[in-house]
Image 1 (cartoon, helix red, strand yellow):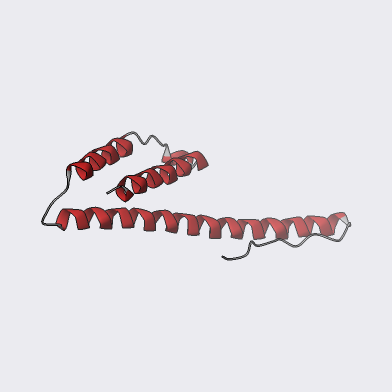
Image 2 (spheres, rainbow, N blue to C red; image 1 turned 135 degrees about the vertical axis):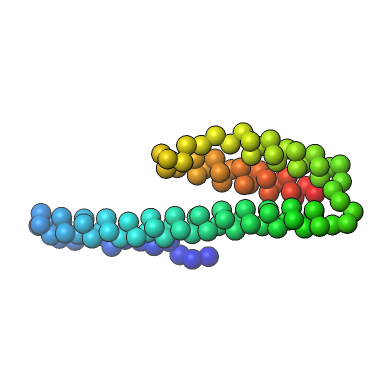
Length: 112
């Protein structure tokens, strides 16, 4: 597991120096935000791709879907239809809703 990144602590007390250090720290935080967001989105996309792959595999199966799988598929469709987000606002709670939905869909597929 990768270690958490720690930011250096400012040691100078001069106002100008503190301002420069604060600016530098904010730039580091901005870079960390980009990295965390990129990795988070990549993980969500991988999980969605895996769900799609599993659904395609089930559809290609000559036996077809069992009753339990059909019930799960209907449950998945209902949950996806209930997703209410406002992407224009770019809110964390919308990302959390999507993350939660993906987890719920994974749970349904795991029961197959």
